[in-house]
Length: 436
Image 1 (cartoon, helix red, strand yellow):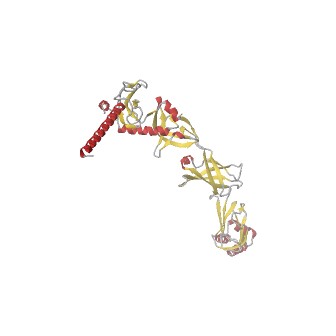
Image 2 (cartoon, rainbow, N blue to C red):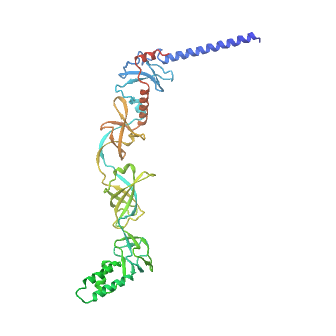
Image 3 (spheres, rainbow, N blue to C red):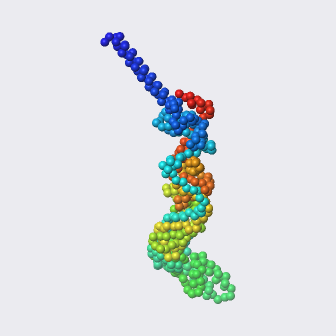
């Protein structure tokens, strides 16, 4: 093969490639023109263009677009140049709200869209909590030594032993009391008419060495030395601290016993942070425990502690429960119910209808003619599947309780599109009609 023949083959191949490219470009131009409505439109949209009123809906057509490529607008109906589908008209709803979304009844049925009314009802949220029993720290006494002495006998020998009011705890021998008592008895035996001051001074010295009025009266009435005395508990309960044994020497002011009463106990309840607004000091509560089946313990909210558990997001409340039979002991779990919660009127919606975005709460309102609009609301407390609405809605409105996330997403996209691409004016419509 010579050089001339090779050149002819190359030139023929180049011409063939040019013809193929031109044919493909012509087909592309033809398809684009048909897709943009330059060809004969479909029967449904024949003769229509942007600005006309659609006889099937009675609404003014703003423009046509491909839902998959919403940024491109057309002024006539036809087939989309991007997808194998017809262009969709965008109507002027008349309200000027770019966040509204129109959904046909057929699509609503396919989505399984459900609505519910906004109602005005009485909100009496039940508040239940689980707590643990602890000693009532306000029902506690400490028994101390009033003077130096020796423990001769111990009646209570272990912690958590139950004691009754006035029960003997220990017997102590106090040598320092003997001298003060002998002085008092000696003055009592003296004869004379001006001895009252001496007797009062001797009695005062007995007080100074640690004797109480009952022990002084016992010495005065018996006329004998009282070197030993018995320590008794002023309240009933359990011994929570025992710091003494038989034969020990005790110093003045030393703590010998700590006793906690059981007539009332504390219950530390863990209340969810979202329901802490329902708590108030003094509110009545009822508690039940598996350790005492069939028994209901009455009590009140004593205090709401200024502390939130960061792990469980709960607020700790201190409740005081009556414990007449001592059935509740520290460490037990109880289930509590607030029984006098405040009842008030409120606007209520199903909790599932509220979309929580983290920064705001949104509800989709269903309007006439298949239109839906997202509304920002201010929510209150939740109870029994209902959420309180403080602002944003009024009674009688209908809201979406299913598929609202899809509607909210579509409304957000539509609002963004309206801000970025305002509706075309007459000049823009004409320009789009001549778009190649």
